[in-house]
Amino acid sequence: MSSQYVERVLEAVKKRNSGEPEFHQAVSEVLESLTPVIEKNKEFEKAGILERIVEPERQIIFSVPWVDDKGKVHVNRGIRVQYNSALGPYKGGIRFHPSVNTSIIKFLGFEQIFKNSLTGLAMGGGKGGSDFDPKGKSDNEVMRFCQSFMAELYRHIDADTDVPAGDIGVGAREIGYMFGYYKKIKNIFHGVFTGKGLLYGGSLARKEATGYGCVYFCQEMLKDRKTGFEGKKVVISGSGNVAIYAAEKAQSLGAKVIAMSDSNGFVYDAGGIKLDIVKKIKEVERKRISEYAKKVKGAQYTEGCSGIWKIPCDVALPCATQNELDGKSAQALIKNGCIAVAEGANMPSTPDAVKVFLDAQIAYGPGKAANAGGVSTSGLEMSQNSQRLSWAFDEVDAKLHRIMINIHAAAKNAAIEYKTPGNLVNGANIAGFVKVARVMMAHGV
Ligand code: NDP
Image (cartoon, rainbow, N blue to C red):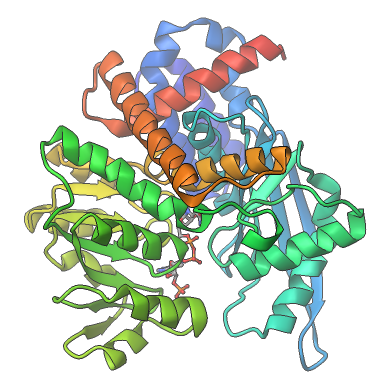
């Protein structure tokens, strides 16, 4: 990094947002990639583009009181960060997980700006969540929580202002409760959420989109190396929405998925993961991945998450959470012959791990590009809602596939233009940033 402007902004971000390590990590990674762009386009500094893009346009923090089934009152914290609206309404998911705090929501919201720009659709960046843990709660408790969350958030969102979606801990059930409550208190039925149920405005292929999109992106990286998924051994972390549908698409392309995980541990099945069993455990029974080893002969369960990266594989798809894959795990993957890593999760690789992948020159697709299929299809859901139409599964899937091919091409070409060919981290950051920066310039201060 040599631009003094970039260094100054990074320092100011660390000072102004102390105690927010994930946020610093995300901003550092993006700004470091942008140094050559800033040097080439001096007008960005004069217009204060970096100072403006690192500062959320609006942050809302609110209390979420709710009553459990025994009548006891609990209070969680709700957050919505409306980060940047240059390209369209704020757009980004809501996460319910005990680890949620402003650092995590800001890192996710910041990443979302560039991801949404890469999709080519009209979406700004935002993110939200709460430190509420839906695990182990009854449906009624989850409903009461979602209603209390929405009792505040409804003031700040709208189909043309800010359109949330799901993320960790927020799936069809939670979106249904939040959408239903919004409709009730605002007396309006419109596309204020994406990831909705298919019976009330959701898009076909949205549930599958992030996982499928990640595999489509990886397919492009493999194509550049004159190979494909056929016959490849694939390791996938997580067993939630993204992981399950990444596994489904990889299998349909002829790959063998040999391991999946959750936050307690991972299962290894040399014969290939039986996805119908994983879906039943995770989507229907809401149980732990360890159940898989009880149901499938020959499958092994290991407690703890990081061991999954020691399993020899050709392709690794981290699809669980941030910083789940460290430098040591990255080295183990390379040593065992892994040729491609595509991130279904947001920022799953630590900076050390990213460096290992880039130094080894394997195919490495960073989350903001590789997992952009989810928000892309959310954008397609918004279009369908505006038209009051529903497109067929194959139509949405074909559009998603085209968008992922375009995102890969945009990142690859920007990496070449800025003289780091093959470095899709730089490429994705630059391609995503330049468009937002130009529009911010056009809008004035
Ligand atoms: P889900 O809640 O459906 O699944 C998350 C999975 O990751 C679960 O298997 C969960 O295990 C595991 N996990 C969560 N936290 C941890 C942790 N601290 N350590 C290890 N494993 C963990 O979420 P999604 O599949 O929707 O999201 C996964 C990732 O993909 C996130 O990074 C998210 O931001 C990103 N993403 C999601 C999109 C979407 O459309 N859903 C779009 C783009 C990115 P457990 O059940 O034990 O908690």
